[in-house]
Length: 325
Image 1 (cartoon, rainbow, N blue to C red):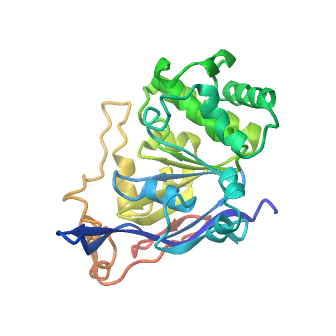
Image 2: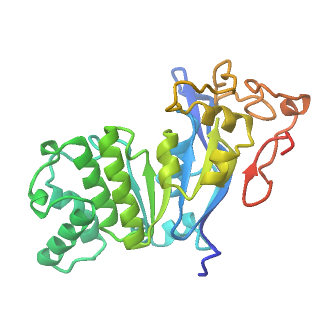
C-alpha cells in the first residue's frame, strides 16, 4: 500500500437506534445517531472528530470497528470490507482494530490485576507462547504507556484516573494494532494529566506507526493531536479539512460558531461571531434539508429544501454548505 492510499474508508455509514414504546415494545421511530457519513484515514495519520455531545462522534468510532453493527453503509480496511473480514476471521480483525474508551474507571475489570488486563488480549491472540513471553510483552506495553513494571501486580482501584487511562492504552497497544479509536480518552482527566497522556499517544503513534481516529469535544486537544479534523452536527459530517486550515479558515457556519467559542487568553479581545440561538433538534426527527438550518444565522431558502453534499473547496477542505466560499 502506498502512502497516498486510504488505510480505512467509511462510505455512507449509517447507524440508527430503534425507539421502542408500549407493552409490546413496538418501534415508534429511530434515533439517527450517524446518518450517511463518509471519510477516509491514511496510514499513520490522526483524524480528529469533534462536535457537541450527542452529535454521533462515539457512535461513528464504535460502528467503524463493528462494536456496533452499521444500519447501512460500508467500512473498508485497505480495500476490504470490515464486515466481511469480521465474519471470515474475527480474531485477526480485532487485533488490527482497537479502542480506548472514555471512562478509565468503568472500562477496567476491578477483579483482574493489570498484568491480566493488559495481557489477556495478547494471550488470546497467540502473541506469547508462555507466561514469561507474556510478562515481557506486558512490561513493554506498560513502559510505552508510561507505567512501571511493578504496576502489573496491582489492581485498578490502586491507581489514579490518569494511570488507569494509561492501563487502557497499554491494553490497546499490547496486541500490536494498526488502528486505534480514541474515544475521548482525556476528557475525564485533569488538564495537567491530559497533556501527558496526549504526548504518550503521539509517541506511541511514531514508535508503532499507529493510525488514530481521535474523538473529542475539546477543540484545543483536537488541534494538538490531529492531522485533519472533521466537524459533526446531528449525525452529519459538515466540514473536513487539515487541522490548521479548519482552525484558520472555517467555512461552515456551525464550524465558525464552534471555533469562535474557544476562550481567548486576552480579556481585551472579544469574538465577533454571534452566539447560536435555539437548541439542537431531535435526532429522532431531524430537520429537512441542511440539519443546521434551524439555527444558522445565514440561512437561505434552499437550506430547508435540499441537503448540501460534502464538496471539496480546494486543498482537501470539504464542506457541506450552500454558501459560496
